[in-house]
Image (cartoon, rainbow, N blue to C red; front, top):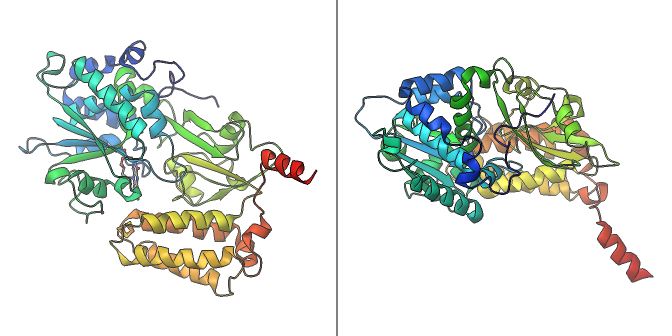
Length: 437
Ligand SMILES: Cc1cc2nc3c(=O)[nH]c(=O)nc-3n(C[C@H](O)[C@H](O)[C@H](O)COP(=O)(O)O)c2cc1C
Ligand code: SF4
């Protein structure tokens, strides 16, 4: 299996982020192709490509666009979800830094298809450098006549606004994002109605992930069959796999869906020298952990689902044998407890109590009943929480107990930091050796 750099093809060029750098490789060429098509044909092309949302759930993108009612007399909106904050997930930010015009061109084509005259990119506030780069790209696109009124002389108008959020994981949940964009506190909305019917300002709205929208120009430029020739039967195309953690060469690996973790690890130089794989996440911290026995699972929506996890955001976090599962799971759970928006009781209270129990186990003060208590708490959150943040919070815990039960049992008498002492860096070892000499 070889890599298929398409989105990331020119990231290493020094001016890849400028409009000239983007145009050099045909950038903004797909726009005229799209304008030569009826908007419904653009939607059909995206349907035919088999593109599925890259934000986590894998919902078919063209089908989502097709849900927008046409001829309803209401404004339509496209909102790009650039909130990227799931632990381990790190693909949209590099994409926007290295090639923001790919996203801008995708926004214009998608907006044209759903007949929207206003589009928004909602980006997290902490990533100021990314927001600045994106805003510079939007300015360039306006100056070049790709945005604004009467784009390319077609009579089509589009305003694109980059909106900087205040920084909250829950604002990546699409309905919380819409509330935040409207100026309210970001908390999920009750569905139905779904955003396609009543989204931003109660008007039909498409919310899509950065990578989903950035994939559109190449689909239009090369045709849906070309895109569908990559990947597997139900998970078409190529995508960004983000390898991080205890891997020799961490980074973005763009490959067809269906590639295996074993193949990607090989391309990334394997687990760091002298160590072996203990566990990994296929798609961020909200997707159940997998182990070395899952190295040959095809990384597509179906394959990972059958293995008991989810493809999620394709954030492949690698952990070797020096890592305590209990400690990792606790850190993730602290994140969920901190980011819980507080709207519903199972998640607000449940994540708090999960942290208390896990801290006890990490400190070696767990009790016989604690593992059952963790599972019971998870059972009361999963499927009962108002949004998927609560469900996701249970994934590392239940899968951690499933594969590493003994480590949780050991937490009844031995602290995790004794079972897995934190590693000292070489610099630290040198310094301490010098001090004792
Ligand atoms: C707590 C939470 C956080 C999320 N964060 C993001 C995010 O940062 N980016 C994203 O694209 N989707 C995120 N999602 C998924 C979105 O709700 C939504 O499904 C997605 O933006 C749809 O785009 P897609 O169909 O292109 O994947 C999150 C979901 C939840 C429950
Ligand atoms: S599950 Fe958590 S984040 Fe989602 S609505 Fe309930 S409290 Fe808020």
